[in-house]
Image (cartoon, rainbow, N blue to C red; front, side, top):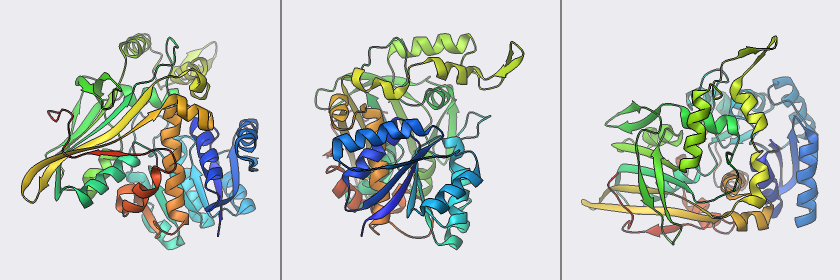
Length: 404
């Protein structure tokens, strides 16, 4: 029987999640889309109606205000809430779900507004309260984190007896033609990229300067060769916890020289600061002001050409013998825009958010508490994700460089 879902957030990812939920009518019956600006929700609802002939209800909510969230949840009575707004709001929304006994899913872990860091620990601490309420929270159900966690669990189940080295590689081979723009929320993107890098090695996180380690990476299937840079990403926090045999875990992302040069200038002039500064008798946060003047990521859909290539390279032992594998997805920006009207960055996050929710509502991944994607059997997710637009491929053995 189809269930009711409440989606919080009407940005690029919310746009994709609404479309993909509407496609999966066997699981998702009533769909409610809410954000602070209801007019943005209505635009998405109109597009879903035009493309798919399904009606989506819209609403206004302040996701920073627990009482506002509780009021909306109690009025709509959803079976599950999908949070694709801002990671600052994770704990507020999770607490509202505990109090209303509503299942919860997000795509990014908690970030405090006043500190450029992100971690799962504050969300993991709510596990007992979710268990007591009899509901489930699924954390990080995007692509990275999310699909990369499932890839790792699948590799551990089917390909490797032990995973010793894990490298997550995220390449955006797309070009939007803008002098400088970010593919998702500029504030979150720039905070993430400029933070000190941390990677896992021999039982501890090791900190190095941001973007100080980089190398060329040749993607499969003629996607191209790109310079990838090591940075911290949240899935490492949960993966090394759930796969304690990992000796080293690293995350890599591609950046163009144009992007990095603009970012360097913005840092040098103070525009990436997150502390308030006084201007004309008022306080403004430079990074938030920068966000307001940069292109809206959801506007990049019709402009972006090329492909993303995201996957994991896992190395370890199988029957006592060294082995390496590469699991990856290639997604076309043009194909994503043709299907749902979004570029591939939003698409590769929105599809797994819908599918994680589907796993929960279909009962394949469901138990009270707080969990990451790798805590569940990866097979049903891997069986379905290709059907919803993100097919995966396995190189066994890996044919990409393993000299990370």
